Length: 153
Image (tube, rainbow, N blue to C red; front, side, top):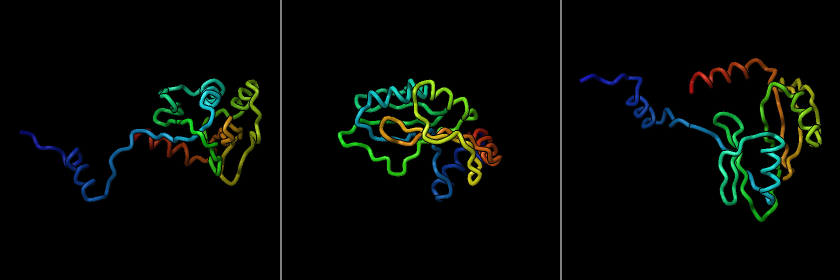
C-alpha cells in the first residue's frame, strides 16, 4: 500500500484541525435588497450585461466574474445605500463609459484617474441608488495579486 504525501489531504485536515488553515472558499456572492426586482434585473442584465445564473422567486444572482456573483432579493423595505459601492474591475473604463451613455445611463463622475489609489474609474447609480463603480487598477501590485490568485485556485 502506498503512503499519502504530507502535502495532500491529510496535511490539510491536520492544518484545519490545528486552526492554521481555513477550508477553501469556492465563490463569493454579495446580496443586496431591492423593492423592484424586475427593474434591478434589467439594469444588471441588459445595461451592464451580467449573465443571470440563478432566478428564484424573489432573488436573482448575476455572474460578475468566474467565481464572483452579485445577488438581489426583493424586500418590502427600501434598500439603504449607506456606504455600498459595487466595484466592477475592467481594463476598458472608457469603453464602459461609451456603452453606458449609449444606454442612457447617467455617469455621475469620471472616467477619471485617482492618484491616491492608483486607479482609473467612473461612477453610476443603479435603479436602487447603489453606487456602481467601473474601475481599472493602475497599481502593478493588483495584476500580480490577480495572477497569484489565478495560479493558486
